[in-house]
Image (cartoon, rainbow, N blue to C red; front, side):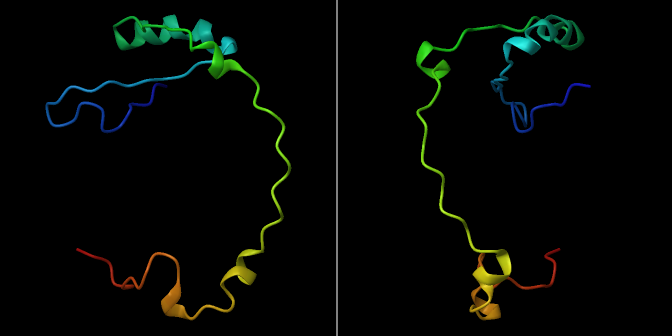
Length: 88
């Protein structure tokens, strides 16, 4: 199964898609290229993208969903005052 990349080259326009594969999946690129009917160009990322990020302190715990919205009125929901009627 190969999923198409949406909105790349739509309406007669050209587009570029970029996919990422780890070393474990690298051997799958050639068969995927055969399935697509064109070879997949492979590039190594710059070294700085391969570095392990420094340790970060854990984020503080977040409030539960019902606690975050409990003191808001119905009209103040995230996303604005949207009509419940579907647009057609």
